[in-house]
Length: 278
Image (cartoon, rainbow, N blue to C red):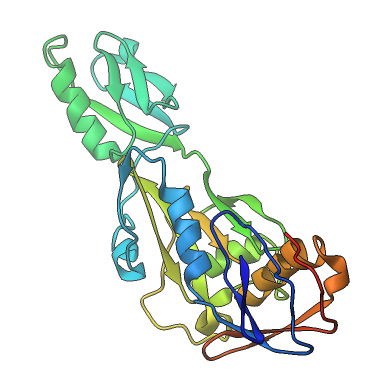
């Protein structure tokens, strides 16, 4: 909402998105408002996290980097072969279902996702022991399902991309056509991760990575991570002014400026008004 304070028009955004221009605007006066550069990032994370069954506060990049698995685990869509040494009639090739399970002869459903082939092999041998005198078997991965990452926001070609191996956020963004440098907030790229029934995220600064001087260790993504490149504050301010002022009150003729540091927004009007508008 806008309210008149002596000769200065003070910017007061409200949750309702309301606008009110009172009857007098002093000619060519400057409006100033403090804008937090992380405000929009915070709101985005909140909107993404709200509604999850289990919520967790945002993590640091170091915490999320430490979660990346170093050994290959099975996932839905992987094709494996269960090969019995002494009972070949039970050998078969299977695709792990979307729910992460397999349907096997004699023993029925078994969860395979999030286990290494070795872990699954040991579990199956134990499960087959009551049915087979010699339950020795091998679990062989025939084909890994192509993992994916989702890239959105201020990139040239947002959408899902294949993840053939380890990948950094910058590499994922390059696969999506690179940043839209007119509007991308490279300093606060958001990584969203959904794991163990929880969704959380962190913001990372890719400015150094763009200049080829990022520090080790590198931040590596996990399959199905979401990489979101938000807009810069100035672009959002431009849109806000255009939507809530110029389009609603076009004859007011607001001009605005933006400076770094404390993120001061300056707005000028080139003509006074003589009535209240809402």
